[in-house]
Length: 444
Ligand code: ATP
Ligand code: MG
Image (cartoon, rainbow, N blue to C red; front, side, top):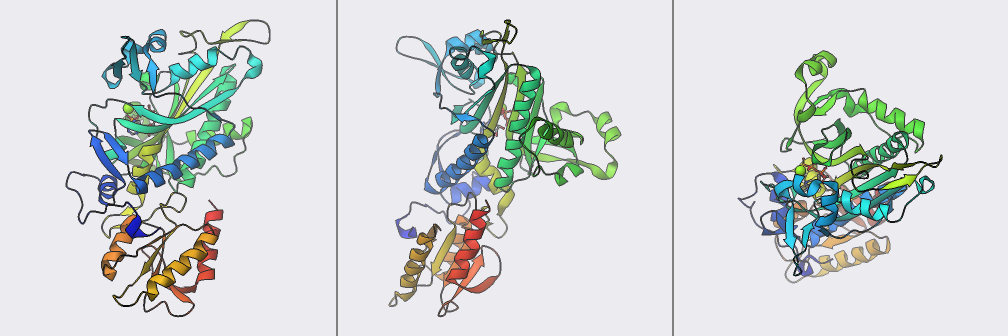
């Protein structure tokens, strides 16, 4: 892609209305454009990153056997009256009346809608478990929308729902999502810690929030540092393995402020392991049994001939919030360099030819390099503008392709001036550069 043809409206300076680095960068490089309070349009650069995050989320849902559906954004109030949440949800719900005077709403979440789908089709324990998910816009009329897309009113969420015959089977489903969340955030190069959490208006009794550390986060967390050393790499998708993985995490104290108890914290966690800090909630999982299936009459036939209400859980990931969360974790705002993980980067590499007025050879060379990159599925952005060197580098550092090739004096013959963005220059032939990037891409 040539920069001169792309829609990347870069601002010279940080916009003054943005208080945190993710919001600043997103406005600065034109990833988003505010439409009204807490509501944003996604421009090409931002949209590309969000779609890549969405793909990773989708792959990891599919891997645990969840099936993708798509439910509407607009829901009928009827099902929310059945569950009892139409009144309980309060002012965060955007309520709409259609031309027939029917009460509708823009979905803030989908427990009711998915329970309605389930109860009309599934009648027997033999069809369980069912794991369904969708990736869809939500609307919550947040009292204080802020930090750009971090706390928007309209936002993009992956929400999944599990249906099981018993508590035991439901915990198995819960643990599958627990693992898929750990894997998803790892692929996004984020360290997200599962923390015991309150269930809030979703209801129920078992819940974890997945939180990444950031000073600008809105969640206060209290944890045993040693939880950061854990990984889930050897976990299998079978009951016992998943159970011991969750136990491994739960052996360490890790809670948000709703669950915090000072006395308990100081008793359980030794002084040197205590960490009190802030974080961003990127995912939240709940188990709530028959909270919705009972009032909405979603029951299944059991083996012995009896019937029971299906046991449910729900599992959310803030796909649009993750764009901001990755920036908070990876943006070096002092040097104004964005280091996108390759898995979600808007471009794999930036080609920066130093163009003289009467000499197009550097641009020709960039175009030829691009042809080779394309053959190898490497997505490049080429700065074909005639700005000076330092402003080109500045711009590309902000856009944040993880690699750069600078085509100037130092790129002589077959050796090219290659950089991992923000790091030292290396002189390498194109074939080697392609090999390096391809290897990284294959390991995602
Ligand atoms: P929060 O405490 O941040 O309001 P929540 O507990 O209300 O979050 P859930 O209902 O669990 O959120 O939603 C699942 C995920 O959706 C959250 O983990 C978060 O990543 C994302 N999310 C929730 N509210 C917003 C919002 N207003 N803007 C962007 N993302 C959001
Ligand atoms: Mg909320």
